[in-house]
Structure formats: structure tokens, C-alpha cells
Length: 510
Image (cartoon, rainbow, N blue to C red; front, side, top):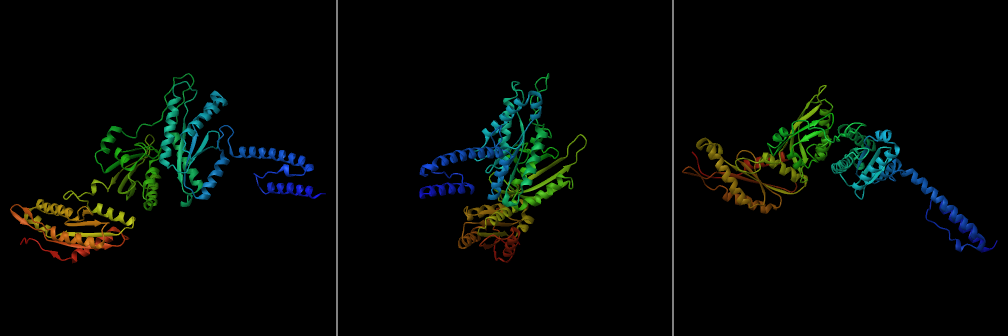
């Protein structure tokens, strides 16, 4: 055996070994083989090409649905496995075609396949570039989105469904095309499980189907328009009249049996709810609750839903449309259903971060607004300077001149305080005759300078009838390198400092 032949054999053996080890792109250089081995090399290349095609067909069948050319259940499992290994959060939508069996039984499987493909086409056209759609059963699809949140995906699917219904409700199509869906957002790194994801999305999908399934025209009957919305749970005009009576209070009604709900226009505006009648609104609301408060709120609401509790009252933080957390008082009652009436949950949410936190006498923020402001600074871990100002002898002014006079003194003091702070800080009437100025952009020396100016100018004379009255006052300053305590603890320290502060004397009332 000559050396050229031996080297050719070794080249063929090495090529086969690379293929056995999983290489899919290696090629045999047939032209480099000796003439007596080239025919063998060419035949080997042809055989390997056939085997590669068969392997690709097998993989295609393992992961691709033959009718729609989408990924199948195996493809979905492989894709979710990849997301789970990366720890990537994503939203999944379980989608079920409405009345596919009815279509197959009445119009045949060929029409049923066309029905499936029409749903597939509508879903594909509405997808974002980073989303994937899988057909995991005869009438079941799953859409995976790594970027879209739950509410956004629900809105997009609702829009797609409405367009499908409208396009096929003219009597020309054999079926009114429609589907039901349920969405669930999961985060593997947060401890979510795949079983939890599947159960949550599947449950929402079936509840949606119960609420919104389209009625198909029966043979011989006049075409029925699709039923896409149930009537609201109460008179809509009455509800809106109640809901618009206050900018800070948001009534709501939730049907616990179907998930249907009704919220005020103000709640939709201030908390970015998807609509006034969102489906599964408890989950939508919980997604907006501050992460530190969410578990406690979920536990209480679960007890209301399952009938363990009939009354819910909590104060917690909810993200508003601006992306900031608002302190809210949430009160609700469960109304048990009867044979003809559903189980209902009705209540009201009060936004403590709006007008209810304004002091009516001075126009400054009140104690609730002050607590919110300190709490916000605590969450962003910023330094703070606080100046407490107490107007002494307001009780004596009220007793001698009346409460209107006392309010005038406080209002004049608030106006002077605004002039002294020159817009550098936020001002609050804490309690009674005490004010607090909160600064987060001044260093301690600048804060002390503002406090000195307040001492000099805040006690300006106020005319009470013909009597010129200059209120005595006390000023105390507190510097914090970082706000790392509860607001109540900080306010208690301020109260202690103001009690020890020397009085800047004013007019004697004796």
C-alpha cells in the first residue's frame, strides 16, 4: 500500500470520526483523495447528504407542526427550557380556538384546517419581532413574549380577536372566527415554576371562554351577532356618577365567579388600568402593588375570594400611571351570591397621595403627604435636611380672637415660610401649629442658613382687627446622611428637637 493511499484512508476515517462526534458542517475533500479512493469518497458524500436530509426531516417533525409550520409542543418545551436556563422573565398566552369541533363536525375537517390557519395568520400578524407562536394541540396555541407585559399582551390579543370577529360576522364565512386566551407573566429567578405558569394561564383562558365565547349561527336560524361583552355588573350611568364624585376615591365592583369587573374612569386614568371593565382585575391590581406589600395584600384578597373573609381593609402602596408608588387605603366587602346572583366583591380605593393630603388652611401638604415624602426619600436612599417650625400660643390666639384668627396666623406663617424656602424644599403642615420643610438638594450648611432666615422673618406681624400680633416661634433642624428609618421615627426626633429649641419671642397676649 503506497503512502498516498494510506493518507487517503486516514482522511476518510477522520471525517467519519468527526461526524460520529456530532460535527454537522465537516466536509470531505474528495479531490484531495488518491484516484483509487475518489469513487468511495463521492459515494460516502452522497450517503451522508441523504442521512443529513433525513435527520433534518426528523427534527422538523419533532419540533414543527405540519399544518401551520409553527413550533409544536416539543418546540415549545425546548424554547421554554432555554428561557428557564437563562433565567429570562417572559409572558405566555394560552390561546384556544373557539368551537373548532363544531366547525369540523358541521363543515368538515378541510374547513376546520382553514379555520385553524386563519387564527394562526391573525395571531402571527399581531406578534412582535421577538415573540414566538406554537401550536401545541388541535385547537391550542401558546404565544411566548420575552418583553411584553401581561396587560399589554392581553390588550393586543383582545384587539386581534375583535378584528377577527368583525371580519367574519357578515354571514359570508362559515364560522365566526374567535379564540379565548389567558396570559401569565413568569420570572424563573423569582422562584416561579412552569407548573404555576401553565396553571395560571390555562385557568384564565377557560374563565375567559366562559365569559366571552361567541355564539355561532345555527343552521336555519338567523345569524346571531357575537356576544363579546357581558353587561356591566351595575347601572353604568349610576356607577360613573359615583366614581366621578371624587378625584381621590375609586369605587370598584368585581364578579368573583366570572372575573368581570368595573372600575372608575379616574382609576383607569391614575393607575393605568387596561379599561373600565378589565378581566381578572385582581391580578392586574396586584401587579401594581409595591413588591414589599404584595404578598400580604395577595393573602388577604385570596381569603376574600375563597369566602374565608368578608371584609378587607389595608393601606399599601400602588404604582400609578407616572410609575411612582401612591399610598392607598383599600376597603372592600364580599357579598355572597345566591342561586340567581353571583359572588361579588365591592369596595373603594382612596389615593392618599392626591388632594386628601392637602391642608385646607395653609394649602401645604399635610402629615400624610409628609410621611409619603419621607418614605420616598427612604426608598431612594438620599440624604435629607429637615427644618421643623412651631408657632407657639396658637391656642391663646384662638381663645382671644377666635379660630379664624388662629387660621390667619397659620396661613400667614405658611406664606412667609414659602418665601424663605425660595422653592428649594417641600413644605408641609405637620400637626397643629407645626410645619416641616424638607430639603434633599441642600448640604447641612445651606439648610442651616435657611433655618436662620426663617427665624428672622417668619414671625412677621399679623393684623388681628386693630391688634398687631407677632407670633412667637421655635425652629429646629435635623440633618440625615441617609433616610434609613421609618418616617414616624424621624418625626418623633423632630418633635423632641422642637421642644428643646429656644423660643423666638413675639407679642405678649397677657
